[in-house]
Length: 357
Image (cartoon, rainbow, N blue to C red; front, top):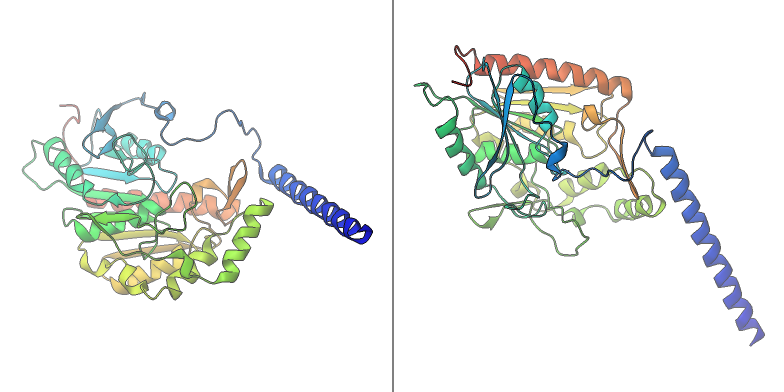
């Protein structure tokens, strides 16, 4: 009996010691990666509309809400370029609003749109209906350059998961003339529910049917185990190995590949070769391989996932590794914006007249 009690005592001591060690490591990592000035009372929430600056000098900002469409229209008082730029953010659920502001100030009409998370949309990045873009196209046809006899040029921008969305839309809708994709995936990947679920969901649907996707559980089990340790110890989470392994090992990989060869849109791609979220520079090359004509790829050395976001994204209990370093990310952000602007000027030309007329 005495031996049993000693064993139980030792197990309790070891358990307490391990718990204290894990808690200490988590605390150290939290302190190490927490940004200066972080305010826990103001967590980021893409659905919080108050954070979007609608008082922009020289730009009329209005909310646009339809059956599924939801976002902002940014119309310059003096619109200098034809057509419209449609913008989507990534898996955080934003409408890429800060980027939209920049282009609106340059005289472009912009639709900054959510694609999930709002009251009239899918609450999670799961089974998002690609059919919703029909509604966007109707809105463009009725409201953008209504007095013009020429076709309205339509460019769509998406970053990360929004790039995956944008690439799918370009394949489905011939009305899209140009796409700009930041840190893209060459495949459709599984959906991202807020809570862990053993059941796999598609990110996208079309005509009520799931769009084929890469199942992340098909990847290397060692990578899954390492991810578990990242979560447990509050280490920066590098999702890239999981995405890379799954996209290569899933037997449905080719079925899930987005068939870019079926779009006529011009494609402009930006990626960093040190992307830690997923293998975007590999995807960029695969996209170009399958659609070499009218596809322009820029891969920046030493840059990470989304250049403007930095090396890490911090939230209490989770640190995401984006990759790159400050200098390379800054250089990539500046260069990609310049290239983006040059292409937009070519695609959308000049428009004479007042955007508010």
